[in-house]
Length: 149
Image 1 (cartoon, helix red, strand yellow):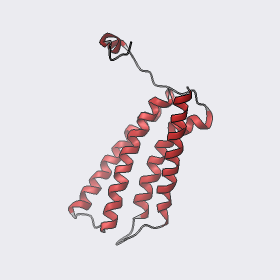
Image 2 (tube, rainbow, N blue to C red):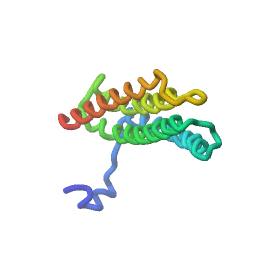
Image 3 (tube, helix red, strand yellow):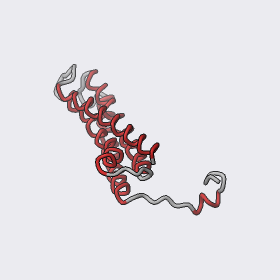
Image 4 (cartoon, rainbow, N blue to C red):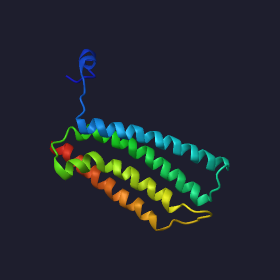
């Protein structure tokens, strides 16, 4: 019987995170506060209080959105990683890869658009692609880990 079909079982059920998931989730939640403060900068750009080209505004929006979504996905991955039998590098990839991509991808958007009057990305745009590759590898690792557990 599922927990949803039995309200009493749901009320008495407890989910226990592994120490690794609990610690990582705590760090991720604190990191979301930095995304919130980054949103204040984005509001300044949109209001014209911080100078930015149209390109820089678009990259600031993309960086901010990727940071928030990937950090939330990384939180979900903590719970899911505890349901696999993975060890070693695969365990790290499944548990932490999305979190690292949440640094790389937004960093690529922000750092590649820095500089007065910039209208195109610099070489640091490579961070976006590195983060995307890590994100894909992490999700594949976690997906396979869940299917084979």
